[in-house]
Amino acid sequence: MVVAAIFAVICLIVAITGFTSLGNITDPAEVADAKGFAWFWTFLASVAIGLALLAWWVARNHKEDEDA
Image (cartoon, rainbow, N blue to C red; front, side, top):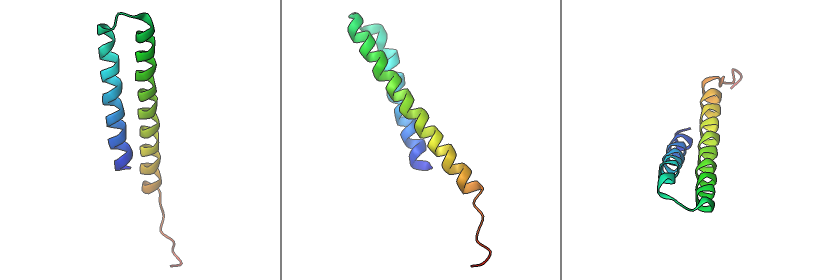
């Protein structure tokens, strides 16, 4: 859960950096590539956030085996 959260933060930082650097690019092809790069990292962050939430939910709802 912690590793997924850290990975999500790193992915979001890379995505934000990609989106903020779009203003410095003048070539339309490079702008399209940079947007795709930034959206890919945003997607990775959303997957990591989803996995972290799933791990948190599983850990929260885990019940110990009464037979053991």
